[in-house]
Image (cartoon, rainbow, N blue to C red; front, side, top):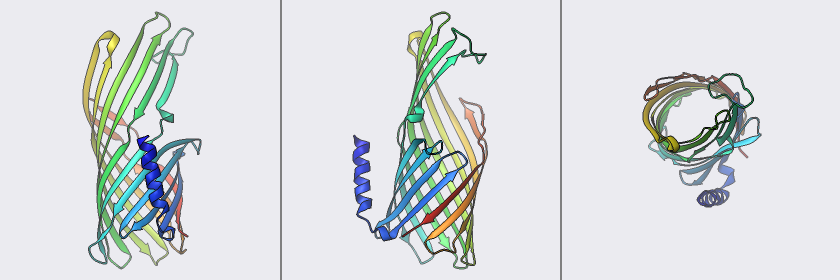
Length: 276
């Protein structure tokens, strides 16, 4: 109910804004995710936006993000912008079942069955950005953002061979610090070339319990990852700006209770921004 009220309030607020000051964007990437979003000037320097993300080539809804930010123009070239985003996930991808052998061997009749569901809370994101336009085509910006969310996993294991079953309950809390540093250059008012370097660091706290066997465990894990977004956008049209973006991603490194690496694939994206 709270999510419905929040969504209705923000949509109503945005619908009352001057649509002439609204920018739209649609994109599709190599992870088969399609994104549609718009950003509108509500009043003065206050902007609001909504972003919808679909996955598996528009088969399922992944998440919706509402955003608010206020731009303070310190000078004609320098600005500071506090930001807030709230991402509401879809729980379509939060359920899975497996039938086979838990140890990873070939599936056999009378093997093991696992039914699991994972639920993530909304993600709150608090950010502050500053940027400077040098007036000769060069520009730069820097942003810090803090993100926090919770997650809960419930899984039931059933061994058909010996009739042993167990239920696992796990809760997690994730805190993430994200740093963006962007530099760009507009070539002859026609092509906007930019590079955005991203550093993500955070902490994951996990508490697990198997009540039937009176087993509990807790672990804390630190993680870090870096990305480089390379973007080329054509700016020759007044109200239509197509772009291509390629993101190079490092592995996610885990330390502490979890030790190891999670491999991340590089991702391409094509999209366009436009206004009426």
